[in-house]
Length: 57
Image (tube, rainbow, N blue to C red):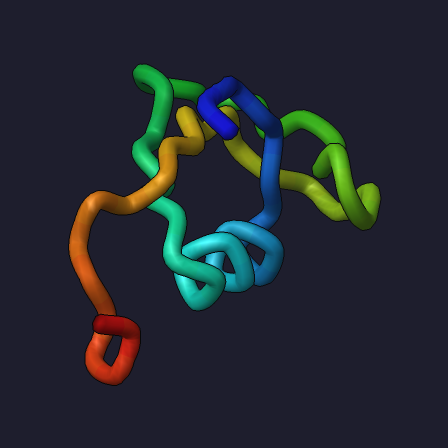
């Protein structure tokens, strides 16, 4: 799953915990509504992490 999403801080953290990379997509002054929960958030580029986590192989 690679793409661009608007995420609040909490939802972005959930993506990071699930093993995804979250990268801010440019500079934003005004927050938009989070795609998942509706709270104010920023645009992120989401990419699958290539790093192996401990215990996965």
